[in-house]
Length: 151
Ligand code: ZN
Image (tube, rainbow, N blue to C red; front, side, top):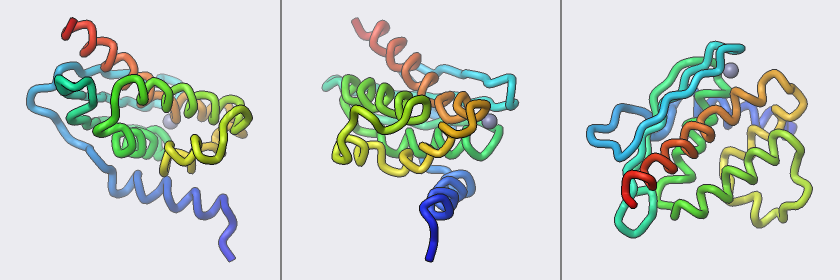
């Protein structure tokens, strides 16, 4: 029988080998590039925000360790089509999950993180937490840029 760790490991490798939403975007409303010098990771997140305040399109480019790139792929996959406020909630939940754990969130809420839940194990490896949150930081910055541009 597979352990949870092995299952998580497979999900991470799958996103790393077959990234979702990866590629350049022609006319992004905002794009933000962030670096994690400790590990050598780079993630650029590009977004288009619709008139209804949802993420119309999201993609990323980047290079680095499997955690940073898989996290970007997972994030893009679950955030596409979401309202910006919901993305901020997911950001906070993910940030909490990899730094402090599941406490304070229901199973139902955690399910909203989709495959990104597979990264909760990085909590045990403080040096890798930055790898996991890098893409989310880029997204958060890109959204505030896109928002600022629209108002
Ligand atoms: Zn890394």
